[in-house]
Image (cartoon, rainbow, N blue to C red; front, side, top):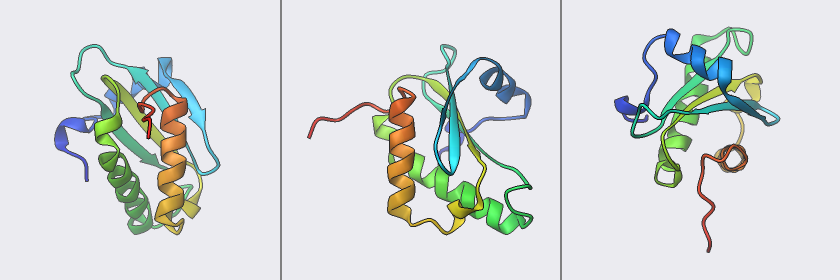
Length: 119
């Protein structure tokens, strides 16, 4: 789980990201980002609708998996951004971890959130 300082607090704080953020879409989820000059680091929210899966257990599992992936990529995140990951497919719950990490890295790089490392 990510640190409490990197989480959104309240539903109203997502409005700005939905209103003025840029969207990058993948096959299982989309990422909406907006730069935040008021903060010193990123904030992240994972939104999983009840339409994705009726079970709260599965929705929470999806949230935890995506939070953990972003936590592991934390050192590569450039600048303070507000990030909202909107899941629209229930396959995220059973998708292999390596495939999820690869898709998340790809989408965050496309959005300009992740620094491209030279190796």
